[in-house]
Length: 353
Image 1 (cartoon, rainbow, N blue to C red):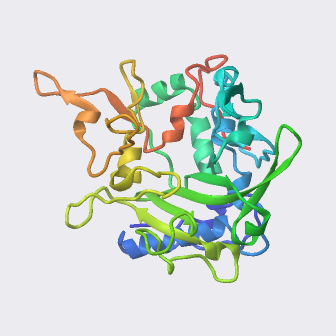
Image 2: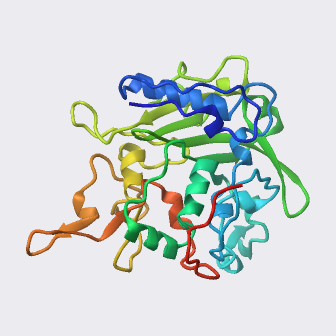
Image 3: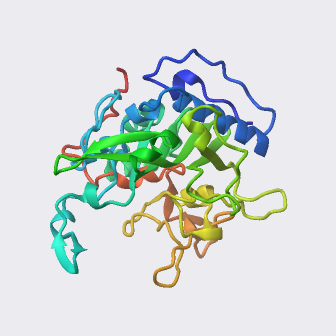
């Protein structure tokens, strides 16, 4: 079954009339599409272009602090600078260079030279679970895995958004934001991609949305019908697809990849199979399974279909299963956790606030 997520679970900082939960009789593709659009509408209300509800949620950087500290109670946040985006780390910055007029020069503002900005956001249900289990450090994740299965509660939402610089003339066709760069100039950005992962009572539902300009009409995935409400900026966004299973009724891999966020993966993109590899080694290094499959240099290749049990463990000489990589419930953002916290905690953090 695919239950609808309560509006009070999905949206914390926008006044929206409560919506009663409904439960679909079975996880059909049509039910998944309907639920995807319902959640999209709650997170991105129609009307004048303004920050969406999810833009007030903590980012992955807010949740997984570099010092491994408890990120504190969930609260709406505002990021006027690079803090919300997944750019280079401070350790990388001193060595970053780019070519200007044929010469290699240091980069003084990574935001200004980025052709695309990516951010990950977490709603309060997801965020509070991470705090309650101390999953914001690798040490905490290892303790949680040792105690049993890591399983996010129903109502958890994590999303990834992609933005690109746009011209002022394009503003009416995009959900936008403006950022002040290091030199004081203001740059306009348009939302081009939004992947939403919603934890339902029966598992995760992935929904991939993208701007209609990402893939020209007439090409695969450029569906001119499955778009947002006419008369709003969201009419320029389409649902690329949804995923709730590894394979279809014919036992063929279900493919889903955002044309912007998963560009270049072609027919090797599957949200569910990729996220199944969000794991933690229980024996040591390497601590995570790689995101991409082996491929020639310069080629990106993902994983599709039913996961190979050999990814996660093996049978010993006596035929007993030995787990080497424990599941983190399809949540890749946990890989951003620092190894250790500033001080080890002997008890779970309270999530009351």
